[in-house]
Length: 166
Image 1: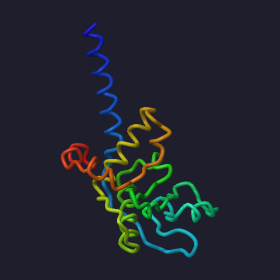
Image 2 (image 1 turned 45 degrees about the vertical axis):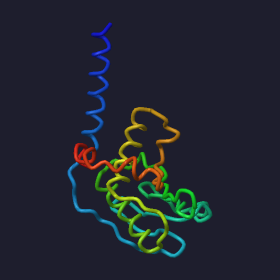
Image 3 (image 1 turned 60 degrees about the vertical axis):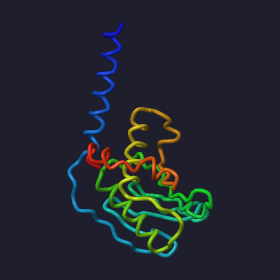
Image 4 (image 1 turned 180 degrees about the horizontal axis):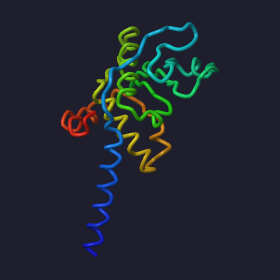
């Protein structure tokens, strides 16, 4: 019985390491640009456009293509400001995550609020969401990632970021 339990743990650990190695792609230069298309995209990144707005703005979008990113600005929530990236499970490249997160920080700089998240903590949270999605764990909650203030402390782990090379 103990031998079987050991094998199950070894297989699980191997699967986790395999998925982690999938995420560790070579870093290349980030490519994003703030474009401010009227009524449209806020920025472009290496794979498409990034649309940021409130729920009313997002409901009116009709020109979204594969690779485009939709972010709902929920920073006006008094109790827990948040930025929600829809279909974040589709973004796998560390470089793409860096570009998108940099754009979110630029957006916050341009339109200041009480939202306070660091890029390393957001990247770790995104990684954890994708890992959960890949293992079919809470897929209804791991398809999108929401970067709210309350989770900054939870994902602010310098050691874990170094180990995972995020």
